Image (cartoon, rainbow, N blue to C red; front, side, top):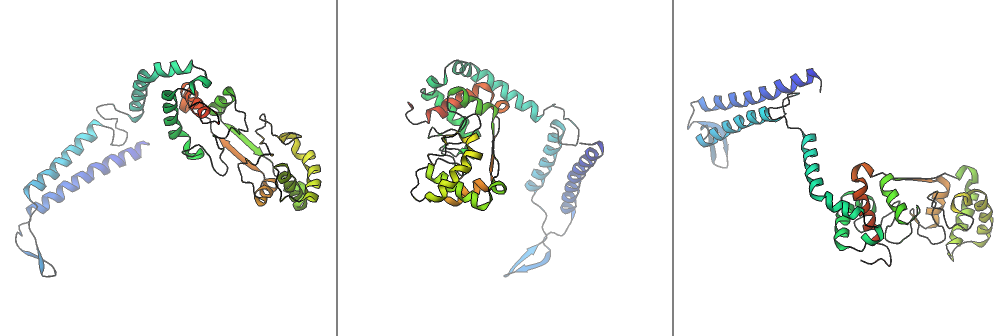
Length: 295
């Protein structure tokens, strides 16, 4: 903080402590013991008695303790404190202790292939705890995702589901963007493409006539990313449109909204926060959630 703010904070804190002490002294010296204050309620009258001695000395001790605390730890503006303690230094110390304790275990797991690691209960328990601290806010406690957030338990991953792709997703994050087609296609074209997508997914409520027209639009605008068979392409993060495992809902209105306005989503990169070792363990845990995986 600036020097002026530092001085203001320091003077303000010390002045407050002094004011508390003076107020305490003034209350103690008033010689009105036993005299009524004029406050009366329900037959009970308040008397102007001084504070009990034990209460007074406890308050004085708390002020002294506060002064000692502010002298030892940083609490007065830019004054670093006699101890030299900082929250950053404490964090680094704790991280160093954790690395010394868990480093060998992480190194051991790092050298174990993800497929093999996903079958080890001890590694999965560790991965589950890391997942709970970093991933559940989006993917949910059961990793089944939600609207706009992928389900990690069904094996349907738009960026690929081999071990290296999975680990790369965790470390580097992903950025997915589907452009809006509303202005290009118009409301009629949006409706036609949406019906074709419903038809691709095997929906019996799709309108065949509209779907036939939508197929032409799909080949012109959509097949570049989703592929000519609409099976999706991991290089673009484009989902498979034939199975209804869609992030933004599978109703007709959901599909039309997606086609008309587009979608965008981002998974943050966790390389700095987790590092390669923890990311490796999380990847193994996520692998263990897949259908047919050995638990």
